[in-house]
Image 1 (cartoon, rainbow, N blue to C red):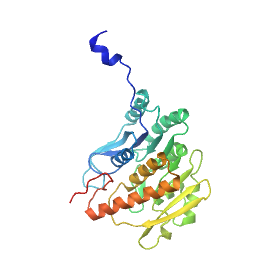
Image 2 (image 1 turned 30 degrees about the vertical axis):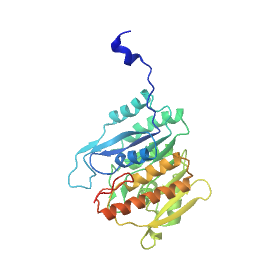
Image 3 (image 1 turned 180 degrees about the vertical axis):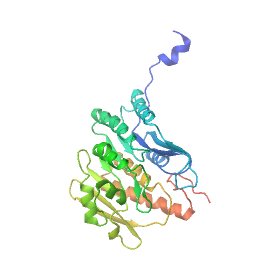
Length: 288
C-alpha cells in the first residue's frame, strides 16, 4: 500500500447532522444562524448552518456590506451535504430569512427530495418578511414564492402577526381573525402555525400575545406574556430554534411553545438590563 494513501483508503464515517438551519448569517450581531446555531447546539443537537445571505451586520446599522448567496451556490451547499452523507440521520430543517425569491424554489427542490427519503423530517419555516413597526423589508416577490414553494412543505410555521396578514391577505388584528387566517395556511404537510406578536387589538397593557393554531383540537390557543422594552433583533430566530430543539427532545407542541416563549422573554430582559444593542443568548457570559 502506498503510505501516502492510507488516510484516503481508510473507511471513515460521515459526520451526521440532526438539523439543517437555512437562514441569514452576519459577521457581527445576533440574528439568523448566529442565533439558531448556538441555541440548537446548546440543546445537544448537531447543526449544519447554510447561509442565505452573508452580511457584515444587521441592516439596522448605518453601514452594511455583503448580500444574498447566489442561487447556484445555495443549491451546491445543500446538495453537497447529501453527497457527504451528512443527512442520513437528519431529523429537522429550519428555514428562516431568505435573500431573494429565487432562493425559495432552490430550497424547495432540495427539501422535496429529502422528504421523499425521510418523510418524518420536522420542517419549521419562519417566513421572515416584515414587521408591524417597519413594514415589508424583503423582496416583495418572496410572499408569493413562499406560497408556491415552501409553505406546503412545512410541518409548522412561525410568522409574526404582520407576516401572517401578508401571507394570507387576511386581517389578523383580533384573536378570531388571526386564527382564521392561520387556519387558511394549514394545508398539505402543515399541521400547526404559531403567530408571535399576534392579534394586537386583544393585547392588554404591558402584554403581548402569541397564537397557536393547529389542525387538532383545540383549534387555537391564545397565550399572553409581558412585553419587554428592547430593540434587539433576532427574537423570532431564538423562538423558532428553541421551539424546534424542544420538539426534537420530546416535548409536546404546547409545552415547547411555552418553553421557547419563556426563553425569549428571559433573554430579552437580560438584554434590556445590560443595555445591549444585540440579543444576549443563554450561553453568553454576562459582562459589565
